[in-house]
Image (cartoon, rainbow, N blue to C red; front, side):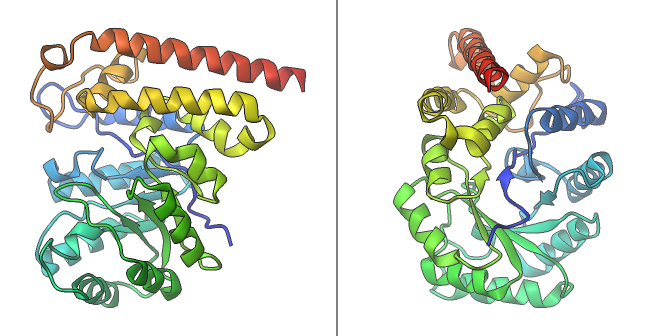
Length: 313
């Protein structure tokens, strides 16, 4: 059973003006860029959006703007679930739900602390679900900040069998774990959407429903091609996969500011300002622009080969 919320799901970054306000004009152009480059859905208001550094009003505004701009062309999911107390979390989730997003995303590390006893995560999740509208659809996100809280197999099974959850953004970064999870959710509405570029294609081949990693902010079209056409073209798919894995090593070079530099270079928006990366990229990541040059040139070469393959078909 395939989920309606599956496929290539970019984690949406937030462009800011130099005065620290949200650049909504640039944000609209960014959403158009995703749509034009193979996105099959959007994960708005997430860690890549710098949600921990956004006010609730800003998180709601981003989710609402995304829905208004996309106009139903592809699904939109959103989180903004960052607080510690249950009352505050309920207020956040209710506010995001009122924007009309296709699924409201629960962050697993907000449902249980590192040292909480077994059962805490499901107890807290059930309390939130029971307090929210019965027709609301949910997603799950194993957000790595402030710490990574992976679901146990029993927890995942409960979420899958509840019928209320459409997807898990899997951050296990382990193909064997992904395969076990795929077996657990088989026949349920819950899709496993891997977020790790190193196993992206292998997870797709194993039955994972797409890719929702940060590198969708650079070349979602290549992930889309792998997802939709890779099996039919194994030799080129292997080359595309290798390029994507190596390109993803750049994530450590100041993401999400790195992605903002990329979009500034291609004209999506004007500023690479971010609330979460305080340093200049060149001061810590020497030759960062040379790395971006190579990523952009390599992606274009692969796009040319894919276009030639399609033309010859």
